[in-house]
Image (cartoon, rainbow, N blue to C red; front, side, top):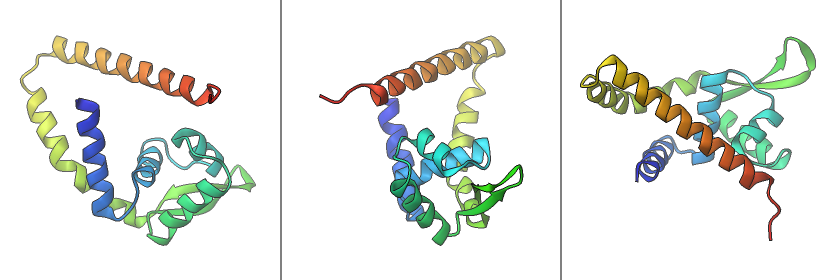
Length: 139
């Protein structure tokens, strides 16, 4: 149920911003990991390189959430980076962040460490399962 509620929350945030859930995932990746090449973004999000990722970047660029810039290490490459409108995303998560922090205040350090290991382990298993499904042959 937690996964469903998380997807519902993210879908609501995306709808409030007027973007898709995939678009929001892209903004999250850029916010956490910094500028990425379009190909790397496509791989991380799980969409096809080329047309699909170009359409995603075009939508987010028109909305002011991202910008294309030259890679300072290789001027032939383009990087996608967050732009000014992306600052409107974080406030939509602040109420949830505050509520979770208040909930965690009831746990001691050892319990927080256990929960952190548990969540990291689950996230790792979900990533592995996702990779397996992506690489599996379709019947």
